[in-house]
Amino acid sequence: MKTNENRTPATAPAKSPKKAENLTVRDGENPWTAAELTELRGELEADVLHLKKEIRDAEQEIVGLLRDGGDGAGNDQADVGSTTLERDHEMSLARNASEMLDQIERALAKIDDGTYGVCESCGKAIGKGRLQAFPRATLCVSCKEREERR
Image 1 (cartoon, helix red, strand yellow):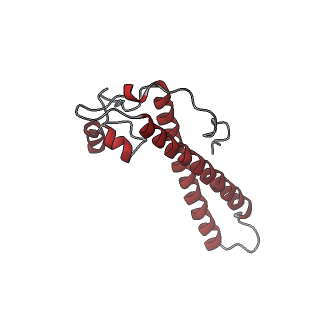
Image 2: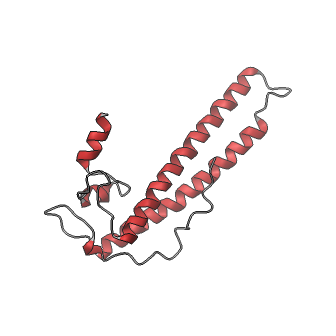
Image 3: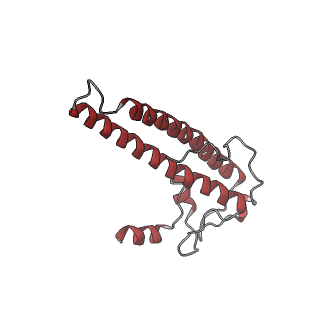
């Protein structure tokens, strides 16, 4: 299990982002305001802290399950199977949280370098409304629908 301790803490001073109004938006959308971007960044940074704690807790739980889950004296097959299932569940949760953390950190980096809101597939604007609802989005609706049909 990879650990996330070497990641930049969300409380570290952010790089100076490009001006909010220079971020890409769809035709007809109002440009990002500094207040909107500050609120979005705050939500993402809070998510980073939450996910790091969730990953740390899951990793500690996995260590405990590995330590206690052996096929030793007093453990019947059902106990061992139950422990294995619980360990696999914790590993899955930690993996999902780690993937979400990567997405959030990528979004924060894109805000900092001024590329936030650009679809990674077609290069068009993702859409401000979509990003406000799902700040980790990397694809516009059309490209996401196309990806899900595959």
